Amino acid sequence: MFEQVFDSLQKATESSVKLQQEMFQKWLEVFPSATSTLPSPTDAVTDWRKKWVETASEMLGRQKELVDKNYDAGIKALQDVFEVTEAKSPQEYQEKVVELYQKSFDSLRQLSEAQLSEFKVAMEKWSEAMTSPSA
Image (tube, rainbow, N blue to C red; front, side):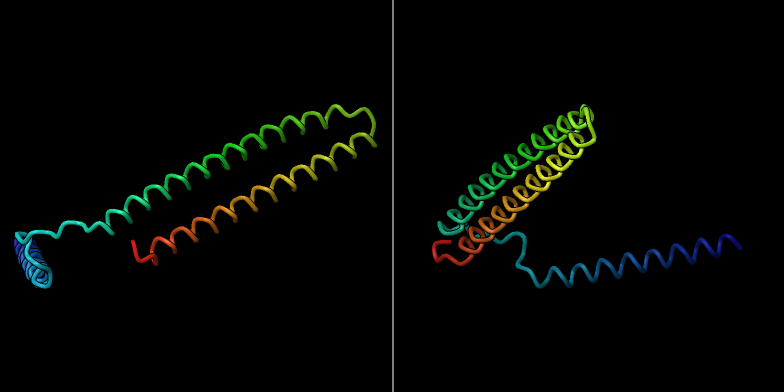
């Protein structure tokens, strides 16, 4: 009984593999043969690649700066939190908490604006690279 099950499984697997091979061959017929030579990149493609690498490098550098600023702001916020606990009176505590919230929201606003600005610059550069005639 197990022999019949394994025999059926083997036949099903073989037919599935054969079908996949035939399908793959049909797909490959659409593309040029692998032996044909690939065209060498034109100057425009080479220029576009260089511009893409340059733009991506600039963007990553600015993103690194933003992350560094964000970490610095986080460290400063932690220091400020510990200063709040040193308040001598409830009024001083309230003033320090309000000041901490204002600084935190201002820092968050500045970071969001910087990220949005960087995104806008990146999109402008990408669309310029994609639409410029020299690309």
